[in-house]
Image (tube, rainbow, N blue to C red; front, side, top):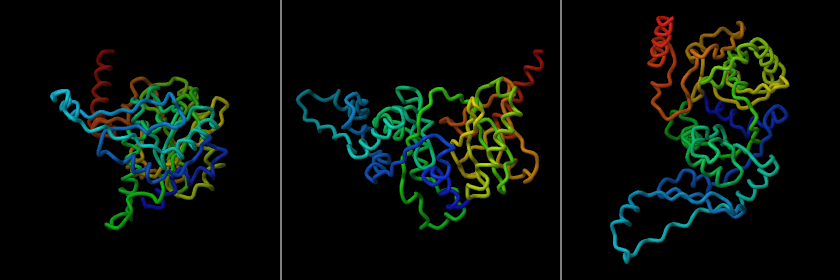
Length: 330
């Protein structure tokens, strides 16, 4: 994987080409002051002060050492005043306008990643945001966003020299229209090798959805046709991954583009397996076929050994043991 491939997968680069085939999105080039805010871990966690929203989330200041010191000191001791919250009024006003234009609720992402791993901290327990402070909270709390900011080029084969860059020239905040009715079982990850679609699998692997099993062949045909007509001759790379969503009207929409290998999760495949697929062979669609086939969540803060499901891995052995016990019970 090379830097050029990583750059092609930035949303500000692919969105204009697929605007009519993807989720409606507003792009904002981030000022360096906001990028530095996202990276700053030198003090307490402060949300930006709001200039547009009276009901913005209160600032979260958590410093246990200061709390211990204040509780043990006398009331007449002098204490340093808390630092003022950061403020980005121009960016906030731009974002407020975009949120309104997108229907009042959006989900955010940077050049490559959405802060899915931080959804637990949001008041909605999801990526849905309706104001600037909610966006800032998700971005500041996400390891996926930190990867975009600091490690996007770490897996590149042409990023060996000490002088190689570790970040893109600019960061963009993509505000994507929020659809609460979207069904997770209808999102699929597609693997393209040598400009041929070689594999497709369910994006949500932690749940069994009977409807996907019953419509497997229909879904496979829809996704294959969409790739042939709308993606193959438009996206510039030979090897890459893209995610799609199939609507209830049986229309296919692009969700995202990702690099081949690197930090992209192969989900129900392994990268070794995908590398060995023959270009021009029969397309394989993998789904969770039964409740026994569900996999662990792959965006969690746990050691990789617990989420690696390749043959011979710890989780693979656990699944095999569980299947043996189920067979013995029957």
